[in-house]
Length: 294
Ligand SMILES: Nc1ncnc2c1ncn2[C@@H]1O[C@H](COP(=O)(O)OP(=O)(O)OP(=O)(O)O)[C@@H](O)[C@H]1O
Ligand SMILES: [Mg+2]
Image (cartoon, rainbow, N blue to C red; front, top):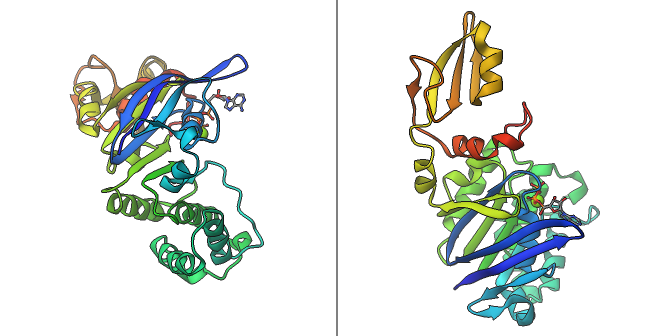
């Protein structure tokens, strides 16, 4: 299957949210990585056919997604960033309700609901009202409903928001297992959620993809630019202002720091293996507030 974005743009009044995106995706896991406001949700909504592009189009095997209508919706599973649950429903009622909207046969819907609640580890909570769920449980239910129709194109907008580390690890395993015959797109600004499961990472900034490649290819772009070093306490403020700091740990006489920089920031700095988080910092440090390193 081929999912193509062709000269895809979206403008809201005078704000260009998505700018001339051109890319073709085939089966695999794609991580769309970008800071708040980069345009991820807008792009995903255009792929899903929820909003119309200002220009350009989305095509599935050469056919426009909006013109495909029902046939496109049969291929699609979607978890919106802000998902409206019906708090008075139980998890099971909710799944059956979405299944009926998707046009699944009631018998099949029941079986599929059981399977999926099990998959996302909510089988024991099937009869609990959603209003009593934690944020992570709701997110898992959201992932389950997106899978009801066994979609060939699965789009998850910030699927891991609100999940704890154990749930995040579990989520990564679920996605890896089902990626063989699907195009899976995951948007996030949390690098570690896509670093290990994405076949391709697409880094989005101000409405465009500024980088695209396998995690290894992207890591190559920061190779040799990540340093481990000791900065004397008296110099720390200056270093902090001047450099892109990936990590720091203040000790008695110095700060043990991880710094992303073309050149060694200080004598004795040691080159270390980069992570995608270092890459993210390199490309987004201009947009970040101190203390907001996710
Ligand atoms: N309906 C709208 N009307 C006007 N501007 C919008 C609308 N939707 C999005 N925008 C703007 O478009 C830009 C991209 O927003 P979008 O929600 O797509 O970003 P995002 O990458 O999903 O961000 P986040 O990580 O916070 O979810 C932002 O500047 C946003 O304010
Ligand atoms: Mg968003």
